[in-house]
Amino acid sequence: AALPSGESVTSFLTQVHEEFAADDDGELSTVAPALGRADPAHFGLAVLGVDGQLHEHGDSRVTFTIQSVVKPFTYALLAEELGVDLLRERVGVNATGLPFHSAQAVEVGIAGPTNPLVNAGAIATVSHIPGEGVEERWRWVRDGLSRFAGRDLGLDEETLDSEREVSHRNLALAHLMRSFGTVEGDPDDAVEIYTRTCALEVTAADLAVMGAVLADGGHHPVTGERVVSEEVARVTLALMLVAGMYESSGEWLIDVGMPAKSGIGGGIVTVSPGRCALGTYSPLLDGTGNSVRGALSAAMLSRSLGLDLLASE
Ligand code: GLN
Image (tube, rainbow, N blue to C red; front, side, top):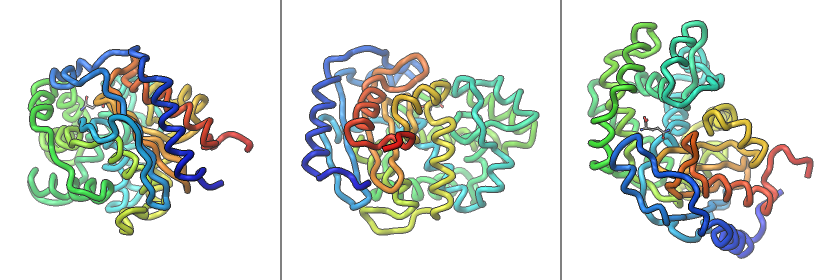
């Protein structure tokens, strides 16, 4: 089914915003000090249809760091470059059932690797970026991510510095994976590039645009460019179903019924294949690291716009 008319999408976004704006459950991320300086009142919603129409409400143009929402897009760029089979074998595609920064997942992963949407698998994915040296390889991935957004994405230097200070665990994961051969090349370089991808600045509107590329099978509904193949877009959505919302991916599927990815910056991208994508921003997080208002909004919009993939009508 197609999306309802533009007017009713906008009025649904307004209703959702009214419903949850006063809900201040959750906490700002404490992973990096700069994340703790977000404004807990910020709440933005945006939907981009595969017809290229953008609908938005609230703080949909407030910038925040993309954090883990970047992971499916980084994965897609590398899957396009290297093929889905290689990454399936090297990085893995199954849920870890463990927190996103778990080291235990990597140890268990001796028998079978993690997946590109948790820190370990994302760092392993980034280690496969082609090119020489950090700067060239960083440009490769930033340019690709900017193609998803349809604009040049900038870095939040303050958050980047703040995250570099606390990247010991990610460095440890990278070195551990290097010892198993899951990370290619210099593990410190992989973490540096990974940390930069997390510190890219986006808005809820950007997330809607980036997600809509996956909704449209890798074709960009606004720029008209083919960003990734249909196969890569489909596999990326499969991974988002499996592990996009960390350990609460099962609960998310029941409540929302669509592939999604969250980040500790407060963003969530939710994709309705063939129809649209939803970008949300609210920095108050639940215990697994998912935006509380974002999750409530996605569930309500899934019902009101009839987007649940598992519903029989
Ligand atoms: N940059 C963060 C980290 O590596 C991203 C985590 C997240 O958003 N879940 O810990």
